[in-house]
Length: 500
Ligand SMILES: *Cc1c(COP(=O)(O)O)cnc(C)c1O
Image 1 (tube, rainbow, N blue to C red):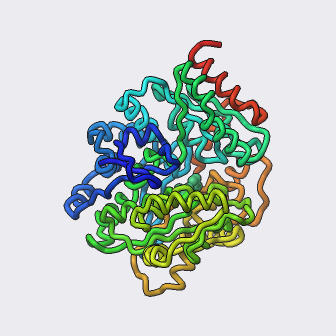
Image 2: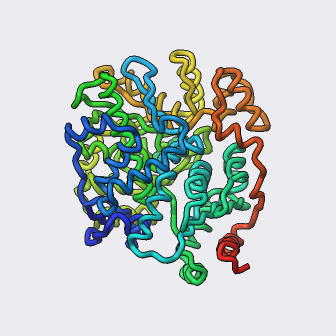
Image 3: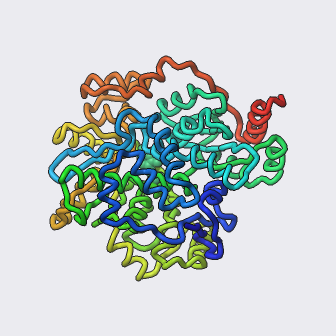
């Protein structure tokens, strides 16, 4: 299987090279040249497997320059870091399921891919003969930074440095990063907001002089965000796995269609469900759920993607995003892989902040996708309702999706397909807002007190990785100016190579 670029069809490279490169030099995203197919026999075999085997099997169809055994050894290592089943499917009501993707080391769905990416990247570097060590650099507004740190900590051949805006992440997220363990990690807070941090980090990626200085020290910069194919491909597996669970438990027959409702930001998670559908997964509707940063809802209802709007801070912060990078991969498919057209539209997005798709593209999307968005107030009501009706505790992001699914279900009573709500974070990661939704009580000053309150109110246990943070020493408390980021990266590289 070869990979091409959404903006240049003449590109044709192996998956290992696509993973090492991250982004295509033309600015496009790497996509598989074809979609491998899963047959009924494949599903029968997958049903007999455990999750690491299922994930290795699905990925092996895309990563043909890796062997199945290689991939299986990575999935075994990655998912052994989870607490119990990596992605259990919980039946909360007749025909209604929650796919819990947050049983990993940082309690968010990013772990599903970011525990795998280090293994894929290390092997990919070996396959393409990359001699420099990979220095992963991340600008984060919350979940990605911590999941990347946990994924890459103490992985041979890689080091990681993470920057976050000092006032722009939640208390628990900050605590998670400041206490990060591992000999190859560095975390630094930036004076400024997320855009400042992100722009400063992007400038370093683009700076050739920095590239040279790092190369002299034996490092090559690398990105761990969701435009990398190595982050997307592990996500396809859990959609296939959820279907296998429904089959194994006798809830559906082979061929029965299922709805998936996904809380979306950068559009990576829901894109993986689309890829699974293209492989032959029987899907009825893909429901894209947003918070009030509803640029995707508007796009799917009008055909125009328009970022010229106010940015809102919400209680589902991991979805506070106006540019959903992975949408480019979907546009590529529904335009019949028209690379020139995609390049033009992405140019328009950059210059004018908007673009419009054609009527026939719009109709294709409308046949498969449903959309909706949820305000903070309705998110809280949904958390409360889920607890009340099903005794099921949801985080703020999952509740956005649950509310959108309820609205869809009321509007379309004829759709009787089983529905899977994709759950992207553990409720204790956003304990203050969840507790507030359930009781009306205000958030505490200390995020651990919110956790205690939520635990005693619901009778649920605080997950181990969050409870353990309380006793962990603060390792990284430096706050620097954004102009100092490049110097910090070089200082970290020097300390790693013992050149200080
Ligand atoms: C990242 C994230 C999302 C959004 O996922 P995308 O793949 O960016 O659409 C939703 N919920 C949580 C908790 C997240 O961390």
